[in-house]
Image (cartoon, rainbow over all chains, first blue to last red; front, side, top):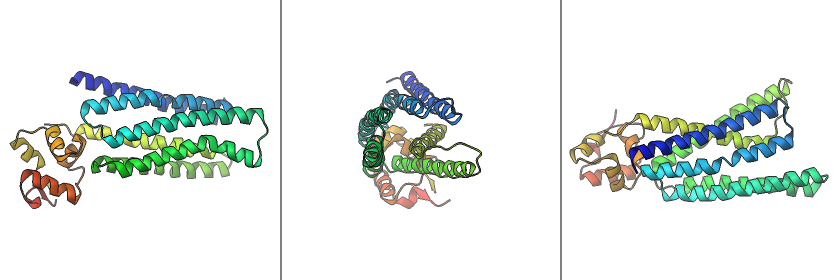
Length: 202
Length: 63
């Protein structure tokens, strides 16, 4: 692969990442301002999550050209894609059922598990990556990114919680924790990639 | 930690990718170690020392 090809792959990765995070931001803003309903927010978020497919492909292609694609990364990507598809399927079924029937008790609990079980699978996938990655620097980076995501969830959650208590902002459902964590992790990965490029090969 | 990895690599006319392949790590790892942004673990430091056939303290030194 030529340097031009590598550069093109890098640009494609940034394009899809930017589009996905911009979509998350717009949907969040629309939901917070009550411009869209809960169900619409769910559906739009699921659609925006589809952008993870081209983003992942662009990322893998870029890593392949630069020789950074470890077997653990390839396994992580395959597992995460399967979990993402399961999430979208589970979410779609859960929304459809919740709109067509009155949910309560065990039924509501079971339907809530439909989108949540794939999220558990995503969390397990990330944990497995940290265990299976042989390259200690890549493992270190993934750990830092996870902690950055956790920091964002705790900071945003605590701040928003108090604002909500004081009646300044509307209620936000707790399932937002996972997307916010993923956004924090993504931002940290982007920042570390940018910093890595500053150290050029001589 | 300071290290002489970049100098030792240049003496052998190896690229970062060449060194990464010999150490079985990513090029990012080599880059991060060379630029002092990441200190390798003891097992990796031993592998680096073995590759260059030098004692660890001849490659790595405290700041």
